[in-house]
Image (cartoon, rainbow, N blue to C red):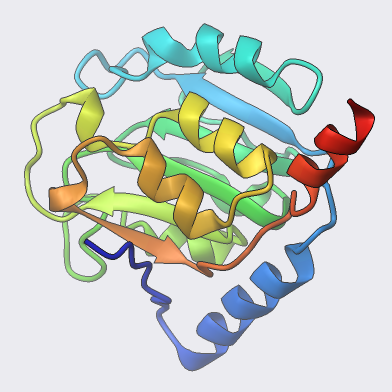
Length: 197
């Protein structure tokens, strides 16, 4: 099996902006913030139990904020944003760093046009560099969606977006990975860690 990631967009201009964000991210080692949001929607909050583990795994590398809200708005320096929701309010009111990753756990986020739930394309239009969504009803099995802890850890260790995202979904057969696959904002992190030893 070969991991793939679609460069999907609502226009050619948006596709070019997406690619440019990925290129601009490479090797920047951003000091962004991760937002892990619990909404209270029991069916879509299945990843929320792992949020404290994700915060602990990233300690000292990425600031992780655990939120209980319908969403976060008006934030700057957003590097990661994970939530479970049919529709995520105010995502366009945040400022995302080049290389940022965000997704919303819901049944049909990966339906890129004509669906009755928020399309994952909205994340890209808001300024995110990578996202994921399922294209058919997956039930709310956490393994069919990205593990924030695994994704953030791999990405922060210097892996590319496509590597990090694919390694974070145990059962990816019902979803689509979207973004600039070679974005690597933390590139060189593994080499730097070895040099410190």
